[in-house]
Length: 417
Image (cartoon, rainbow, N blue to C red; front, side, top):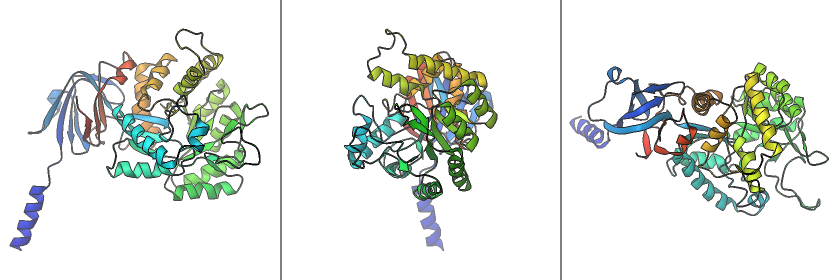
């Protein structure tokens, strides 16, 4: 018995105590409001205390992090990214899907994940591997095991598309090229959803419309009944469905089917946004993606007049705000550089959203939309210690989000001030 006690004591002494930190920033955004002079205590992987200095007990021996001049925030949550893609001005989408090996794409994704984390985005909803199968599931597992630094991932795997609607273009019709997603139709959709769930996805993504009209314009793909089948099948497993949709009819069908978020929504009308608000469906506007694509095409932002596509996007985003639609912060990073995700948040403010509302969208609101609010999205005792610090006050200028000085995920420091 004595030997057993001595062994247990030796093992306990060999195990280091959980890390303890006291963070002293200029101000704290807790996911809802800004507080001057707050102190935040982290013990292990959790937030132990947060509040005015007189209301917080500082544990003896804790490491104090002096964050003077900085704002402490919950780790930012990216609502729409593709870690298996890289900017289209480097390599077109067709060539990424057809010419880059799976190994190359995974190596790129590891680097993209690191860049995203170091930019202050500690959680990412990755909405489709675009031809890389379930590599996102493996990347999520590798990050969880500590094999590579990266954000917490919610992954969608292959994504669902209607037969004939999606895939690389410009090939002779006799060739069957990899489509970049999983085609399925009618009753087979239930099987496809279940198969994706079996491969470990967190969220089902469906393309409710796409550019397959007679003139290459966006048109709805799945019927309302098909979309309802997808939602019903996924929901029985406890998983949400999100829909790529940019046409009013595609958005209407997806909303009535019960999806949780609509991605892009470029052609949304006041009527369809009111319907979304009534059904509690959020919009993930991905403003930065179209902005980037137009610049790749030769638009000189800031000097050239705004293209019609940008003016329409501004109007649709404003209509969503006016209708009271919940806004999810998501950028479609991958179309542009990973690690530059904050450009979406700046554009949300430039298009009419109050800066504090943008910060809420990228923290507490996204956490609630993604069913993570019991763990993430706020600075509150008991929640996971996913925290970032930036220079200055982002509530008065969201450009401050590019000046990340501290990154902590689960109590582990990845970037020190």
